[in-house]
Amino acid sequence: MLVIPVLLIVVITVVDQLVPADIHLGPLLVIAPAITASFAGPWITGLVGFLTVGAQAYIGWHFGVLFTRNVLVQILALTVLSALTVFYCVLRDRRRHQLAQVRMVAEAAQHVLLWPLPEQIGSMRIACLYLAAEAEAQIGGDLYAATPTDSGVRVMIGDVRGKGLSAIGEAALLIGAFREAAHHHTTLPALAKALEQSVARNLPELETEGETGERFATVMLVEIPDTDPITRVLSCGHPPPLLLSAASVALVPVHPAPPLGVHELGEAEYTLDAFSFEPGDTLLLYTDGVIEARDAGGAFYPLAARAAQWAGDSPEQLLHHIRRDLLAHVGGRLDDDAALIALCRVPEAQRGHRHRRPP
Image 1 (tube, rainbow, N blue to C red):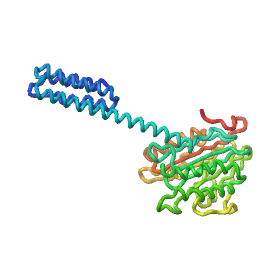
Image 2 (tube, rainbow, N blue to C red):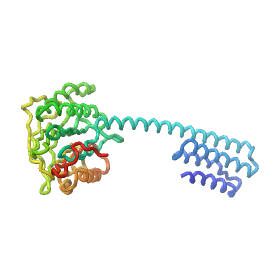
Image 3 (cartoon, rainbow, N blue to C red):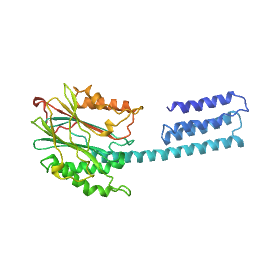
């Protein structure tokens, strides 16, 4: 890239000596430091500016008019413009450094709120995918978490009202409540009741003026035993999961309760659904940002039909295919946050360490 401004200086200097005397190309030399500032730092830009001023002085010396008022003004103007360009580079690099620091802090904070799930817990091989609607963000209003229990693993996926960075507070609240309550309640209805109470206590503190009573979250809770294929699910207004097997792809039937934060229910009012989750099957949990993603014609993303094409793939491969296909469907940019978790029950002979995390 540095060749371009240097070559411009040489070309302008040479051509200025070949054109008629009443045509002056020296002022065009200012292009060189201006171009350099777009890709180089202040030192390189200052060097190019120095070469520019030297080239203008050489042109004046070549024609024997170096100390005329016109050439001196041109040299002074090039010096001032080059100095301003260098000053701009200094400010830009300082802002770039500050932005890099802020981005590092933001990424660290987002990683703490929604850290990657282990690639395997007990009998479950797990893969997760998060696509944030907010530019430069890694998380937003969607959330997920998984924790091992004495007999298996409990998984939560949810979606708080709103999207992007403004919804991170609610997402962090639910994740923290789940990580603690999942170890203290023996049943999913009791866990859902605990999450509802946590939301009722803490969500009002996150409400802004004009949002009273409008904060809520949909949640899907899943309890997968290590040895028993009977898996239990509880939905609080969340879309039902997909069960992918070698023979079929089907929605798991659920009886959803209201979303958390809408109406507090008693433990007995939650409906617990169960289904058979056999070794080799894959359970796909997702948020409505996936199934409500639209293409240019307004058509929703057909998750079940597309996932059926990759039913035999590993969780990682499945989510890789869905991510690429989903972004192609919407034209590269989602309007809402989207999260997916793929869980595959592996046969006993293939199970590794209980909590192996990805490197």
